[in-house]
Length: 421
Image (tube, rainbow, N blue to C red; front, side, top):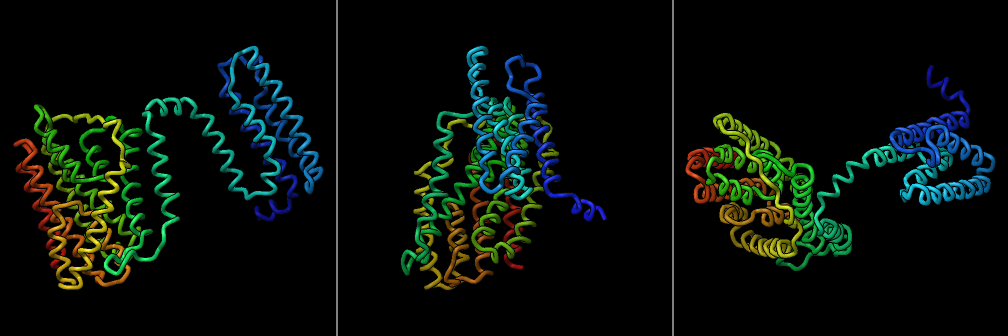
């Protein structure tokens, strides 16, 4: 019944109400934004913006085909806004164009509502309101930017949006059954996760505690996080909860690998879901138990502000390892079959496992069965956990050694139990 009532209202009346209401909202926002300022030389706020929107509506519906009245009216409005802006500079010595631009957006609401879907119009209004309201927050945010932040962002855009689409999809060779596109896609995926972790640590959680540092570090590299936290545990007064952080980083490692599997091979991701969920739960329980046993206070970790997550050298090493493992995997499958992959996974665990498992996930020739890829991935993570345990014992303080052995032994044992089952 309500829908029938709405449909009975003429479309022009519905659109007029929307234009008037949205224009008034933008004007009210301008009123609130300039509430504590001298408004003697302000172009306008609630009533003015509402009338600007209504004027745009009237001039648009007069001639929707050519939009000539609307364009002429827009030119006149722009002239008035220019005069107001000139006197704003002359009298107040202020150069902000925000109110002028919002006034022009308000004037353009009528053709937007008629010609574009309603969700897009609403999104534009919401975006304008948010951008204007977060002015102070943006100032605070930009103060955190280093001199190379936009260079780093530009690098990521280049590798993900420029280079990747240009690469061919044909395999490199018979021995390397990976295309340049797949090869570079792995670099984009790893770089994207690293860059996301970097953004979170620097801008969202710049002074994070041990546990949050561990979780964010696990997105980038659980091995590197283990080394950092293990060294921290040697400091006088450092909490034994660092080992809980180390185990948490390992739990995040399983989540990161699952995301990579979801990107590159959904079939493998489905098979890894339950095993990795069990390992993540186990890591969470172990971390919780260790955390409860620690009585010391939380320690703040500063983020390294100049660390570049998109270093070319790192990407180059990753690419070389990826190519090496592609050749090595192809050789092992050809000469030793799928059984040799499990042994190779055990050996590879002592290195960076990401290039290896990404090579397995992209086995386009299907020379390795899904079950073998799943078991090889779990074995590689177990082997890598053994290496991290050794790092923790060698680099960590005496207070964490017993817990490190217990925590990693449980995860390693559970991993091999899952593979056997």
